[in-house]
Length: 177
Image 1 (spheres, rainbow, N blue to C red):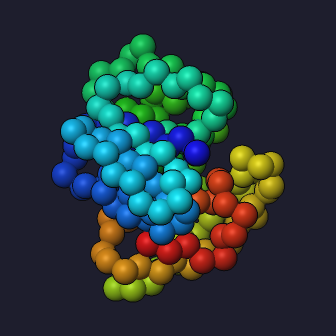
Image 2 (tube, one colour):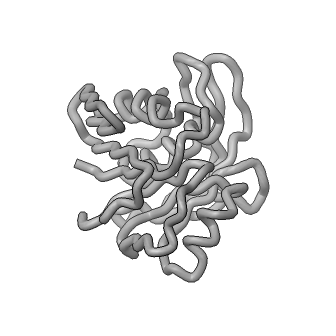
């Protein structure tokens, strides 16, 4: 099972439910969150949503930063993890600076690793703007990745879910949400 940590305070975007929906369509998910447990599909991903800085003692995984973070000056992320962060999230970027953690930035600038190049009601395209190495060691070259949407999703949720799927999937020609 692939560990995905969603860390930060509620910012009104409901990103946890949106990530759960996306990951359930891309291999299955167990979602643990404040007061709840959800399981759907083959349970490929473990999505752990927390406001408290987690103790990360797994071999590898992904930590996705919400836009609002609690004070976490003593927070330690293993270098085997990959961080996914919105490019406007200055608190998370400060935390990651000089950490040696592989980081995928998500946003709408040319400097971001992932950005949305187009989106409409049922489909879109995510632009991988620089080479990313998967957990299996495969290099993914810059390209457009089509996405299929069945419901409207927040842009950051789409990009964060794409980052997780790209890091851990062999098949990335179409990502479904």
